[in-house]
Amino acid sequence: MNIAKLKGRMVEKGLNVENLAALMNIDRSTLYRKMDSGEKFTIGEVQKIKVALSLTNDDASAIFFD
Image 1 (cartoon, rainbow, N blue to C red):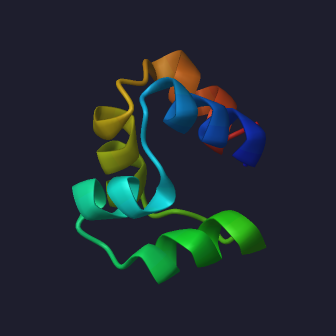
Image 2 (cartoon, rainbow, N blue to C red):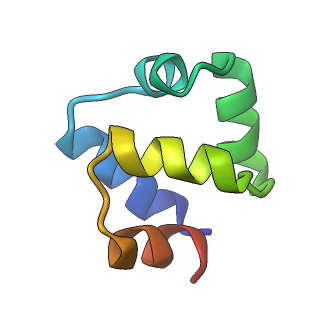
Image 3 (cartoon, rainbow, N blue to C red):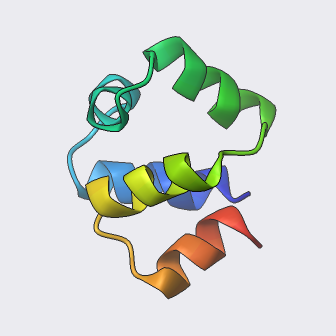
């Protein structure tokens, strides 16, 4: 997972971890943990991030699967 790309896209969209976690309907501590530890996101979480950050399939692939 490419956290730098994820964080960059969050900045582009004007979101911080707390905002993104709220859009995903998860606790911010869960999102922080997954981002900091490299723990895998579920398919559902990836879908929610994709929608929240307006990611294309290629963008999501570059962030989550590279």
